[in-house]
Image (cartoon, rainbow, N blue to C red; front, top):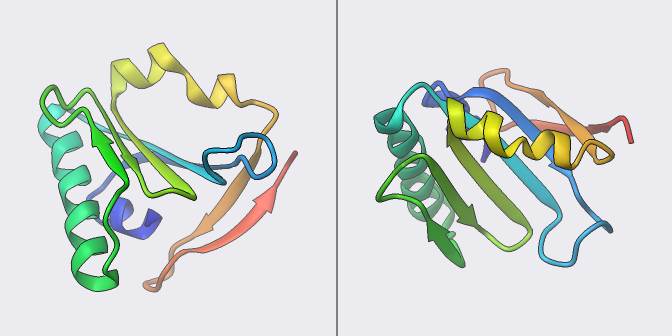
Length: 118
């Protein structure tokens, strides 16, 4: 999932490990686009590629109309794609500061995830 957003040049890509902290998911993927068109392009690309390549569809999605904060809920993983101002306003990383961040490595293959911090 993270590599798909990265391929669309998503900025400040962060994964938070929420396992055991909340009942509704294990991970938050958080990123932002440079403008609303970019936010929408990231979200549409992630949705399309997960559907066509992996047969995955979100449980729900929100925010496509305004494209300031698009949320894609895949059950264990919830993806938040913000425009820059909304990301700063809602500050999910600050809200979940005690959650471990997952180290991302992109080397032309699917992301490998490693928990860090805690």
